[in-house]
Image (cartoon, rainbow, N blue to C red; front, side):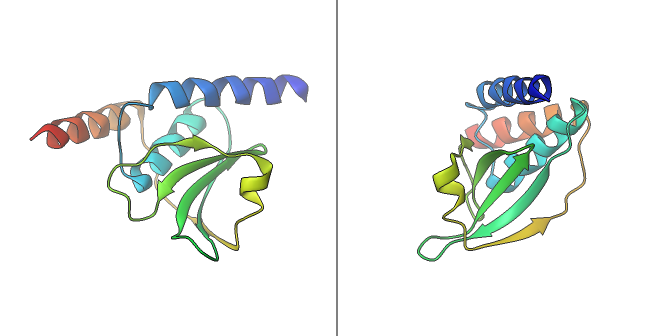
Length: 119
């Protein structure tokens, strides 16, 4: 069990580094991370998370690791690793369904976003 947790932590760390400068929307961050984790053999879930005094965000969880993909209406959002105290602030969670992307689709999405971001 510890090996799986270490492997997930390692994969999540690699994804955070890989997508740190990509600047996708919060929804695209969620789609890309869910897809990347599935391509690496992990099961993850995405949620729209509501708060008492903040706008909703997209979050992802994989084996107890939580990631914030950004505010739901964010055009450009950073991905952040969440700690337990941040997760406890959530007031409600609605699971999000999205089609998983292939490696090629992820690359195309990132290239398109990069191109339009500079136009």
